[in-house]
Amino acid sequence: MSEVISNQVLMSKVLFSQGITSSTSCIQWVEKTDTSTYVIVDQTPFHPVSHIWPDHPADKGFLVFEGKQYTVTDCVTGAFDVENNTLYKGRDIPVKRGEEGWHFVVVHELTSDLVLNVSDTVELNVDEGYQAALSRGHSAGHLASYALNKVLEQTYWRKDASRKDVLNNRDFHSYAQVLSLVSENKSTDSYRLGKTLKKRGLNVAEMLADLALIETKVNDVLATWLATKAPVVMKCEGDALTDSRFWCCDLGKGESITMPCGGSHVQSLAEYKAITIALTLKTEQDLEMITTAQ
Image (tube, rainbow, N blue to C red; front, side, top):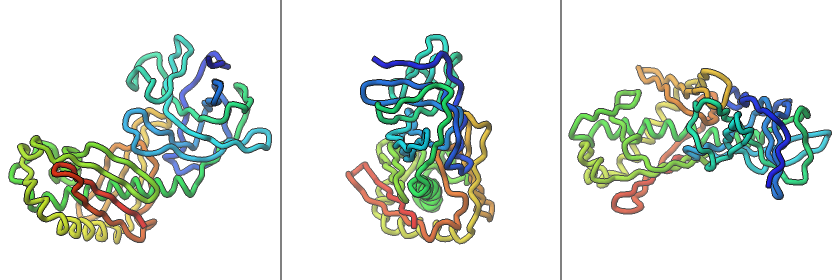
């Protein structure tokens, strides 16, 4: 059984999209179990792992209270049922975002022996190095997916496709992606090359025969894009966790990308020395792209 200390909770203001890694925050909710203490604050620099598409890991860092530092052991998305004064975490969330009477919040998990109360003031500090490495991996993955679409557009489609990316290339990435994972300076995308994709017009056999060539061409595109040193801007429609956020990068020459994304990211392509991909056929129908940032 958990002990709940509070009678209401407000929506968390998120700061990670602004590049803020430290904040002084007021506790709105504390919930204790035998193993953990769960804390919600009015504003936080921590990026929580999504319960819907958990590709971007939670930030690491610390909570400081009365001069003592406590490790934030996890950071997850929560949904608070206002009518029943109940918090649901991660995969236990029973509703979709936007449901009336529910607030989506950032939940910080700490050790069970920590004693905190509502209205206490704490300091939250994100591990800047770890967050920056995840940000480099995530932004690199976005660029790689668009570069792959661009290269495949040139040769490997026999039909027009209804789904195009923002650069007006047929969206192989969106059609085929089944799994993605962001890690430190790396992004891993898994693609399924099934019958549906072939029916949509992708020449899969030719593509697989040319994997080494495609890999080289994608890396050439990425090098060209990095040479622009273009800024990366996160456009936010609000500062609540559920407000829409967009990853924006103008690569010049008519290639400007704006796409929805809730992760943390670099602020400029100048932060990279290089981005390269490696394509590996795991099975006859499963292709993996690993993007590495330097």
